[in-house]
Image (cartoon, rainbow over all chains, first blue to last red; front, top):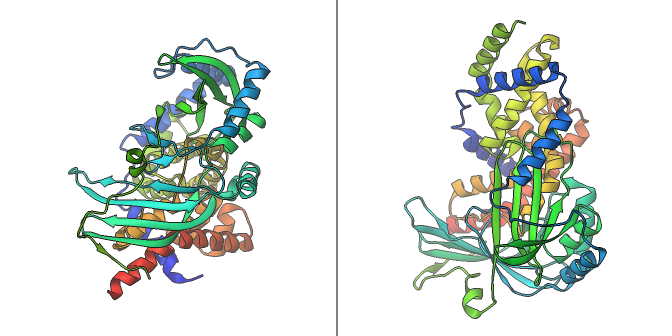
Length: 295
Length: 171
């Protein structure tokens, strides 16, 4: 293996961690948690039962969650309707992540179909003083249905898969140097929250259709992600829900809670694919910028 | 070990070696906050088993970090992935080496846990292949092939940026 990438990895890791220091109270917090655990164990309490009660309380107390009259099990007809709808939901509907959403990058088309050309805008990146310093875009073709299905199947079976490697075109705009480049590049595609992915999850039972719900005055369908009951990861998901629009079946809101108490809710915003909205998928290259060559 | 004694020992251990361990944990977990959570879990295990540990407790903490990270992330990814609509490669400004190194780390933290652990042990901890294999409880051959796959992934993600940077140098 060439040594330049090894050196880059070495330097990058050093640089990334160079200024890291443990929190001053780490030892005290650790010891306190250790003592509490011992007390609980001594008292003979069942941690499993306590965890179930705590998780139920958390779900009931979700600040961002909708008031729902969802039934615990959806009627089979509703489940079938949902599966069918996910099969047909498609198009260049613009997706805009809400502020604070745990998603990478900028703006994407929703539910891309196999073979569809996809533009993903990554940016604009804004510096601390509010200036846009770079922008970018990736363009690639979604893999074929069979490749995507293979990936989903393989991903579920072997989580070491990591991601699907794709190649396409990348545009980078450097607003500091007033320059831009367009080059061939490669990307990793994560598991997509699209028709095939969601269908696979419902079909294999990892998503449970809870039932109809009301979200901000709109009819929704609530889905529950079946989080494993045991997980020794230092930080892991303890509850996860998603609400989809009852008419369009597009995702409306996601909610996650982690074992460290952190929780997040984020809204999915879709805009019609008008020329103005689709233009938002492209970075702007101001007049006078110089095009730099690729190698 | 008495409670107060154990507490003092932990404080001393964290004061002396905490920063170094945190850096490893942060790379394994993908960030400082998650790294400190990971380190705290490993330290709790140290407290539970300290009396039975032979030798340097740091070795125990490191092994625990690697194992927790590999096991935990393996299961956690199943749930994390749903938060991802698209996960394209990181935005890289090919004009700066700083951005390139930054990109490498951002790709690194998204690698499968075992690949990431091998790369962290080999290139951050600078362990030999045999030492890495011993730390992860696998064969030297597995370390070699896993490291090679990880580096290929890193190279694939940064190749275009490197090429562009080379072109910029030539200009």
